[in-house]
Image (cartoon, rainbow, N blue to C red):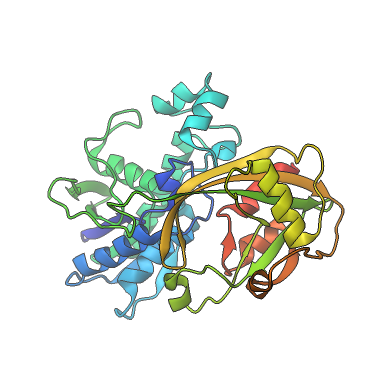
Length: 365
């Protein structure tokens, strides 16, 4: 069998990478640095010939692959089997949260126990079998060719182990860098390592917030869910970043809520924002905090360190009737709609927060 070369690249950075949050198979988009990394990868591979391009079907990988495939006339072949490892109920949680909530089993994850799986997830052994089968199928379909495969850190880790013969619990010598080419080969039914990227000497890809002390922006947001399991999302036109405007987006969907005023608590801000945007009166305990976020956020052309808390509010379906909004606020709020998890997952519109469909399924289970 002729030698097949695979160039493997991990997707660019996401906000969940910054937060050290388990992404797994949640469909999280690239952040500003991640988009710049994807373009840098395309420039680095500009003079390399590829016969085909393959990608995980999750958008963080697919967007990275599109940057390389653009202008080459190559169709991206999406392969769901190249998705990241399914980490079950851990997905959406930070490592720090999982370490506390699952302190009795988290050490199995750290030690890379092959038979261990997070609750409702897959084991490393199952993951290895899935990834090995997918990569081998790609190699056999492309005898003698050179192909690009864009996927995830876990997928590239398995590829490295296939090429080096290392066990699942052995330590990898070098990290899996975002949007960086790594090369392995398949010949006569065997894998071999050609080159694995090292961090030394590689240029740092800057993000717009690098070198700045970002102002802290605390916000309270409401995940308002009706008895059928749909969430209320508002449609907004204000505050879109230049990047999204350039892509042709002129509005986005998000859960009701907003920034705290000076001296205001999260719960007070939640009650005020929900009433102003929907007319719903939240009295007493506003409900549990079901998610927290902390990440760089672009508002217009300015960057802030967003610190957000999401409160779960269960209610009957209702038609929002905003109260006490200024004229400017009214022009920024375009409408509303109740969304099911399936509709959120299938939509290509801008919807915040990231991973909302999974959070919605979690709180309704």
